[in-house]
Image 1: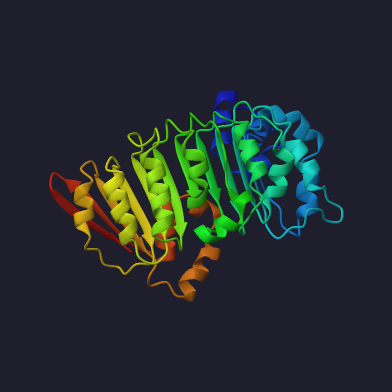
Image 2 (image 1 turned 45 degrees about the horizontal axis):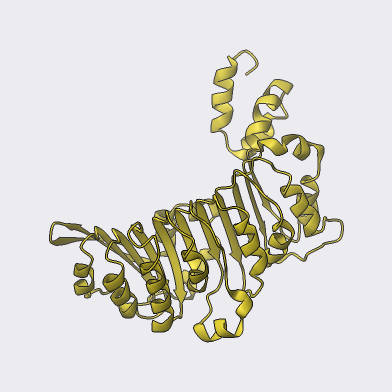
Length: 345
């Protein structure tokens, strides 16, 4: 490669996988100078019990300090790992390192206790941050640090908070579980459990796509969210809506079709039977062009076990993930007054 034009070498390196790039940067100084900035542009740490110490030490090496301005995306998965492990850094030190990435645009935290991460990052400010993903492995009542962190980043365009949903009764007992953000005027996409919607919807102006998880919630939870959306500034802008609902979806369809008639694409993921007859609801939504029903009613243990076998890369592609899980998917598209069905299993 030493004899190739530098533009061609850059093109080849850019197409390589991270594993390939880590090999190439050791070949020569020329390849190292070309590869290193690309390799550190998107940083992914999978911190497990077996490699926690090595992964965390990596974050304070001289290379990281030198490459900090080049890091645009930082993603960490730290499941079943204690706050500190023998020979590793405390989470506070790790968060301190991340807070020194001046050009960070994408931050994704997948953790058994992301509140610990966010608590240490809540005073950090990333002027270019546009995408935030926080995944909780269990129900949480420590939401104030996350509220504070989001508030410091009003230019966010994509926000995803994933955690087990709670019922209205549980929410009433956990006052600290409310997400409160005064201003997110630039947000275009949000994926949230239902109980976070009320505290954030009032600050939204540009929201066009949303994914809402109602879990086992019933009419009370659905009514709260749908009416909050209807009376907000995004009621006429919201075009794409995905709803996750356990058990039946009749009440969900009823509220959405009667209150959010501007939706153009609607997807419902539920435990309902693999049959759909509620076209009367769809007819209410004059702008609706596409409706998709994803059913998990036929899931059995071996199907659920497939989730753990799907690679992280595959989950980034919804069609591939659905194929691997054998989910039953029905999609209808409207052409004039006719609904055409497409089946995928």
